[in-house]
Structure formats: C-alpha cells, structure tokens
Length: 499
Length: 86
Image (cartoon, rainbow over all chains, first blue to last red; front, side):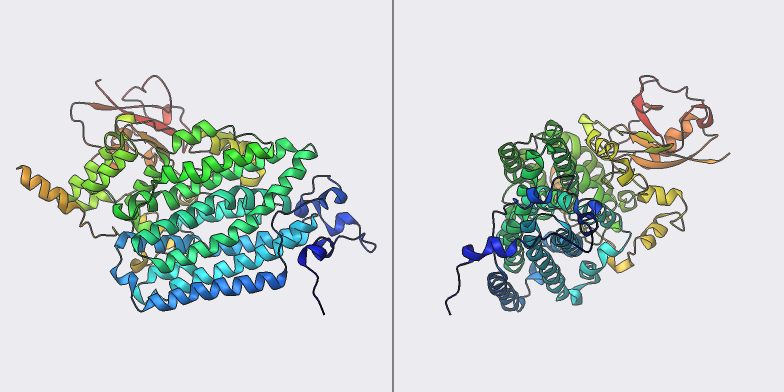
C-alpha cells in the first residue's frame, strides 16, 4: 500500500483540537497553564510551525544521530583524551556537564507543558518532539561524563549539581524555573525556545563545539553539535506564538517576555560560557572571544529576528553592548577567587600570553581587571596563598543570583541597584535585573539568595566551612586552581630575569 | 552592641561583599573591617590614603567617629569605602 506524503496528511493529523463536552474549554486548558491570554482557540489553530516532522522521521533521524555520537565516544575513549587535555579544558567539560544535563531535563518539563496545555495544535505536536529531545539530551550528557567518574568526583556533579544549594546551581535553577517550569505554555514557548534556545544554546553548543574541535576534544564537539541540531528545530516553537500574540494586540506583553528572558539568559551565560571561552580554553584553541561570539550569535541574530518579527530591540540593548566588555570578567574573577565553592577547577587564564590576548580583545583589561590579578599574582609569588581565598560572601543579586560585580581598577564603577519592596530591601546587579523584578515582583519576591540564607542562620557554622557543607561540596569536589598555580612561574621567571 | 550586616562597595575592587560590622563600630572601624576582605587580596594597599565611608552613591562621607547605629543605615544596606586624603 502506497504511503501518503507527509505534507498530504500532516496538517490534518496534527490539528487535534476538538470541542469538549464533558468539561469546559477553561477546565481543559486552565489559563495559568495554557497562557492563551483571551485569544480564541480558532486563532491558536492558525499557529504554523516552520519545521514539520513525523514520529517515524524523528525516530529514524535521531537514532542515526545518537548512534554516530555514541560511536565517536566509543572510538575515542581508548585514546583517553581527558588524561592528556589541558586542565583548563577539563574544567570546561566538568562545568558544562554540571550546569546543563538536568537543565535539559527541566526543559523537557516545559516542553511537556506546551505539549499538553498549549492551545496551538502545532505547538503541542512540536513540543512532544521537543520533550523527547530534551530527555535524550539529559541522558547523553549524563552518560558521557559518567565514563570519567573514575577520574574524579567532580564529574559526578553532572547528576548532582542542580540538586544542591551550590550557588551557581541556584543561579541556573532560578533561570530555568523562571523561563521553563514556572510559566504558562505560551510564555515557555517564547522565553525558553525563542529567547534562550535560539541564541544562547547556539553559543554554548556550537561556539563551544568549535573550541572543542580546536582543542582536540572531538567527542565533546560531536556530542554538543549533535544536540544543537535538535535545539535549532524545537527552538522554532516560539516564533509562531509570538506572531499570534503580536497580531492579537499583545505586542507589549510579548516584548516583555522576550526582554526578560534574553537578559536573564545573558547573565547566566556570562558566568558559564564567558570564563570558559576567554580564560579556560587554552589561547591556541580559542576561535573567537566571548564578546565576539555574543556579537555574532546573540546580538546580530536577535536584532534581525526581533525586527523581522515586528518587535523592537530590548530597551536595555545599549547596556548589554556595554556589559559585553565587562560582566564576564567579573564573573570569572569571582569564580576563581571563590573557587572552593564550585564543582570544577577554574583556570586562572592570566599568564602573560593570556593577558596579552585579553588586552587585545578587551582594550583596557590590564588597567582594570589586571590590577586585581596583579595583587593575586604577587601574593602567590610571595607565598601568601591564603590571601587568594575569601573570608566572606559576595553580595548576590536578587534576580540573577550571581555576585554583584563591576569593573575594578582604574575604571572602577561598583554599583548596587537596591529596591525596597513590601518592607524588604533587595539588591540587584544592574538596572535591568531590578526592572525584571519590578514588573513581576510576585514571581520573585519570596526567593532567598545565599546571602539571605546565611543571614537567616540557615548556614551553620556561619563560615566558609558551613557554606561548603550547605552547598554539598565534599573536600575532593571543591574547586582548586586548575593548573595548581603553575601559571605564576612565568611571572617568577620574568621577575628573575629582570632582577 | 549587635552584629550589623552591611554590603561593601570598595573602591577599586571588582565585587560587592557582605561585611559583618558591629552597631557600635565607628566609620573608621567599619572601613577597616571592609578593607580586611579587599586590600591585599585584590586591591593594592595605598598607605598614603585613609579610608572614608559614605552611603552608597552619596556625595559626602560620614564623620569618621560616627557609629554605625547612628548613621541611619539599614541592615544589609550598601556603603561605599573610598581612599581619601583626609
């Protein structure tokens, strides 16, 4: 029997809306879950997903892709790349595996919400595949690091990180909850798929894949570039949802969802991807700077897409452009200084060659960030390692849950953006973080940052030891300088030569 | 006397930090508690300067002998600590 072509049956088969008779439409699609915003079902049925696939096609393609990725892993495992790789690159993998796999699982919950509660049949259909994608991504990114657990317990944080109160894990959960698990189906389509996956996963998965290939890590490159092909497909769910909102008088609301999600995603990637690209990856393996990646993959892409869609650039675009030169340098310095509180070993990435590269990519780096690293380097050269560790907590932003950092040194611009709301004093790292809170305080007001928890007596004993215990970091899991401070030897040699 | 948490925005440093001072500390004492977590760790000492405290973003310093309890600052409020000539 001849099979119909997919395009001959797809639209009819996936339009699975019907008129409920046992319950009302409102009960079948509760507003807080579906987010239809008063737009009638018939309008949502016009949702036209740009990428169409069937279940047999999905299974066939994904089986082939996953088989290829697993084959690369099996073939290269014998080469024991991890044992020979630069420690900075190993840290990149451990940081990635801790932050991403269970985030993928949270994304599958968001996809499941769209699959069940979106009033757009095309959205529901695509989200089923998206849900399977995210489950596969979780499995892949738990399986790959598992092979390395014999090399150290930090690799186990692929499973562990998002289940702990470790500060970076709290920041990641806060973002994923806000754009994925704590929103209605249409908000999820826009915030998770359009804002987060269109641009930012591109950078993490394709940008990092390029660095991985340059570094010789073909297993990681194959894994994450394979994942990105799925992300590119299911990220297209947001566009048609935005189109319907815009055409039905909800443009301002759509713009706000996009603006919040892009900002919050940017902040998380500034601590996750920024240090990896500009500090952990060995200089020879860096394809582009983090800022260059951001300009190419995020700024350029979003500017085109938003304007094509009939939306505007976010109101804070000039602030974002400015912060591309600074935010991730502060995040990196913070992660390195508070290194015992993370599950990977941060590479300082500030040898003389690194600093030359940083100055070239970020003019003024030496007179700003370099001033702090000068003091740190001097302490290490003179046996004062204790002074390269903290004895207190950084102030944590009540939106992004990351330290409130600034440009240090000659360009010092430290600023808190406080807000009193319902008698409580909140702190924010930027006016944009504060704006995200102000437009929707009920979404965020109950959250306690690590500093709030410390002051509330939840961290005992109230010191670094208590904080490490609270974060679930056993001694062998706590971060150390990735290269065991070997990088200071070049400074020592230069000093000796000059003497 | 009571523990009084403040956040410190220290000139030249890259991050704002939680500092536990005492409500009876003078501004000079509070500044020294802030310096402990910054100077010599990420900001080079400046022996030719003294440290002055102001309300975050303010344009004048608190008197050096003023006690934390008398500043009007709220717990967890942010202060600036600045290298000054006098």
